[in-house]
Length: 70
Ligand SMILES: O=C(O)CCC(=O)C(=O)O
Image 1 (cartoon, rainbow, N blue to C red):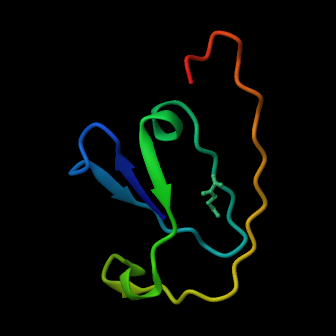
Image 2: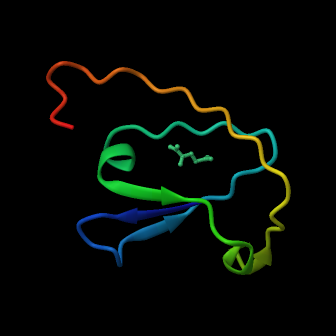
């Protein structure tokens, strides 16, 4: 997964999502960065090919707080 800063797209970070892994996006990672699953031809981590196969994603979202500007 790649996180890219919305303000400065040169500020990005790749995360390795292992099988059966759980990730939580919150705070700046949730609201100030985009997130994407990389295309197969871009799917490398630490120089190692990460094959894209069938992927099941279960997403849980919280309702925004009333004070949440987004
Ligand atoms: O499949 C994923 O892990 C990404 C989910 C996603 O982009 C989303 O809907 O927030």
